Length: 367
Ligand code: M6R
Image (cartoon, rainbow, N blue to C red; front, side, top):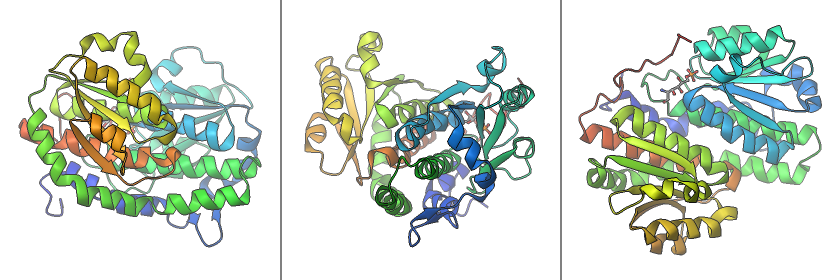
């Protein structure tokens, strides 16, 4: 059932070209230049009229929600707030009629996320969901929603569910942007064409980088700490890379927006500190280069995830992973892949139980 892979996690990482394509199938239509999301068609007017969308989720699903915030604000000009479901739930939240709460959950059974959705529903908000498991509590209790269709995810560390969630959020933001008149037909067409190329770009990354990431993992297996830095769309990817490493390899790791580094974490950097920089967003390139220089000045060890042929970043990096270029707003779908592999190989080297890390369960059904 692991299809020849030693672990479910590796199988699920390698499944992503297909799971992403499955998630787009029948929804993203390049020929007609359209996006059809049947599950939310009936509430599209509510979304168009929504003053804001509140996203609530936990863990990796919360990270995809953060990517969603950037996507909805850029593509549909709808303000978004992203909340930890647990915090939202216990804060006497200011939501009610006219508000949209979007919950995101792979399992559809996460107790805090269920509690958040029930609370918002009680207060009169329209509650929508992005779920992987059909028939789960969240998919039943939300008023409308979109399934991710990523297939069963067995490894405790979420991989293909994350990319599918980001694809759904992207398609939602694009169709909302179109309905609101934020995006022209022409802009839509460019975005749709580029989005349809993501599965083959993910495939390219898996084919061309797997070996070099294995080698790199060998060099950093016993690092006690890791820092992950990203900007804009890739700030949530920095958080996700750090979470993946923590949960399966038990290495302490932190993700930060790159510019926040100088407000504290920079004090941690010395010649022992690997710093993973996600430098694959064009519009933040120059600023990212100065962040890399700040790390290097303190002898930190730079591992960069960068766009093809970014020689400035390459020259400054001890190790680099080149990925195909895409639109900045789709880049999390590509940049996260090498980070999943890096954490996987480090965990394997350390002899950790990758699919069932200590103290963790696939779905967290306690509040
Ligand atoms: O099933 P959910 O998406 O609601 O789960 C949320 C988190 O428990 C989950 O993403 C967790 O953080 C993963 N182990 C991360 O890899």
